[in-house]
Length: 252
Ligand code: NAD
Image (cartoon, rainbow, N blue to C red; front, side, top):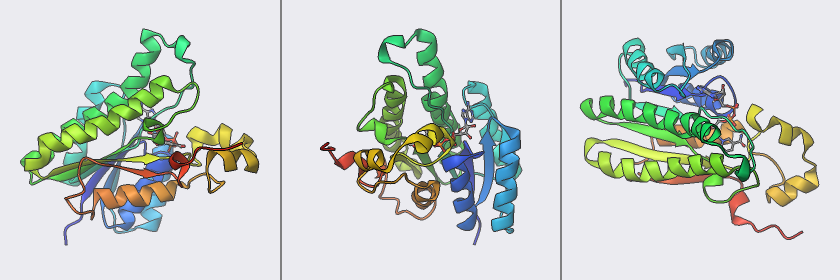
C-alpha cells in the first residue's frame, strides 16, 4: 500500500510536532515545516526514532510570507514525490486588548494565524485536484465558538479557518479534496506554557470540566484521522476537541 505524503506546518513544537509523530505512525511520509530549523530537526529525530520507515523531510518556512507557502508545497511535492494531505498547525498567540488593535497588529495576526494556513491549503489543493484528491486539515481553536479576554484578533482568525473549511469543501467537493478543521480547547504546549504553569487546579476546573489541559496527542489523533482514514462524507466540518470546555457555563 502506498504511503500518504503530508505537510505539517508548525511541526517544531506542540500540536504540530504531535501531528507529525502521529501521521508517521499511521504510515505517512511527512514534510515538517516551521520557522525554526533547530526545533524542526528535533521533531525529525523524534519521528525517525518512532517510525523508522517514514520518509521525513523538513523545510524552514515562515507561513506569514505568501511566497513561502507556495514554495513549501512545491518543495514538499518534489521531496516526497507527491502530496495527499496537509495539517496546518502553525500559529502564534499574542494577547491584546481589542482597543489596542492596529492595522499592523491585525495584519500580523491574520498573516500567520489565518492567511498562512489558507495559502498552504490553496497551493496544496491545486496539486491535489490535478492528482486525484487529498485531505486538508486546519488547526482552528475553540476560540471560534467561545472566547476569552484579549483574543479578538486571534479568535477572528480562528473563526476564519472554520468558515474557510466550509466554503473550500464546497468548491472542491467534485475534485476529491476534503477540507476539515480541528478546534482544540486549552492544550499543554509551548503556546499555553504561561497559563499552564500558573493555573491552579481550581482555576482549571472552572476553565474545563475535566480540570486539566488537553495533551497535544489528543489533538493529533483527531487531525491524523481527518488527514488519513476519515470517511470522505466528513467534509467541511470542524471537530471540537476540548474536553467539553465549550459546552460548559462555569458557575463560580
Ligand atoms: P506552539 O507554539 O507549540 O506551536 C506553534 C508552532 O507554529 C511553533 O512551532 C511555531 O514556531 C510555529 N510558527 C509560528 N509562527 C510561524 C510562522 N510564521 N511560520 C511557520 N511556523 C510558525 O503551540 P501549539 O499550541 O502547538 O499551536 C498549534 C496550533 O494550535 C496553533 O495554530 C494554535 O493557534 C492552535 N491552538 C492551540 C491551543 C492551545 O491551547 N495550545 C488551543 C487551540 C488552538
